[in-house]
Amino acid sequence: MEELFDLALFFPIIGVLEVLCIVFSILFMHFSAQYRNQKLSLGWYICGVLFGFWTLIIFLIKRKDFPGPNTKVCYQCGDKYPDSFQMCSRCLIDLPVINREEKAKQKKLSKIMGIALIITCIAAVIVGGIIGFTTVQSILGDDGLMDDVLGVEYKIAVDGAYYDKKGNRYESWKEVILYDEEGRTYKYVEEPVQENEDNILSIYEYYYVRADGETYFSYDCYVTAEGYFYCDKAGSLELYTDDTDNMSEEELDEYYNNLLESADDEYRYYDYPYTDKDGNLYYCADEASWNEKGELITAENYIEKE
Image (cartoon, rainbow, N blue to C red; front, top):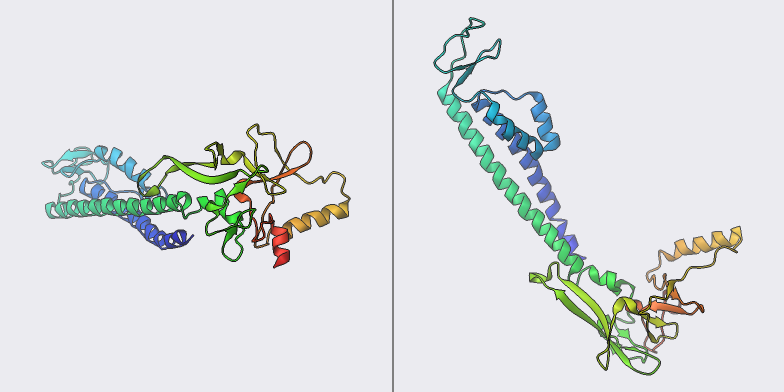
């Protein structure tokens, strides 16, 4: 989560860069249109603020239809004439004089604003890339949020350590050994199937490997209510739900109030057990925890002991 906190520093930066991109794009359109003897209406400025780059794209497409720097435009009728013409043939009024120095200035300002726009856009893309890649790395990295998805958030550490069913102590939840009723051991393994540099967007598969090398996908692995390893390859287990059909109105109110109160507990654990057709309960292996005595612990009995 520390990486995500650090990202908060980048959001004001990218916000400023986005505003600058809009400002530079509007100024670029303004001076570029002036250089081509075309005045931008208020609508162009409003669209530039509201739609940003879409307005700039439309402007670049429409710019070829502007009169051009060496074209004179009649004030009254809007007819276009080459620079050599002095009078509008329709209105019989003098055409505006092209100020070469002003045109050079407008061209220069248009170029400056265009370069500033490109630099600002590149900076915004870089900062946005940093935010995106850092976020993904935080989610998928070894120390990121993906650990929460895999169960770290729901694992219960006792005095900063993790234990297995036999009371053996481990520093990391990934080292905890599972046992089946026959005494065979199962070790948690992460295997990369697609790796990228710096672990960004790397893809892993997660297994429990028995001592003899037999592997089991983690999403098929559970522990029984007694704490023994169980594999449900057939997918026969179903999510356990409380039977609320036969509860009275008062019982239902108490039931749902208890659920709301439990949501604030420090350890929410075993909220979603599974059951077989005989009513036996099972819990995801990635979320199974034991105390120093080798007892399978849940949020409820762990909090009571505290």
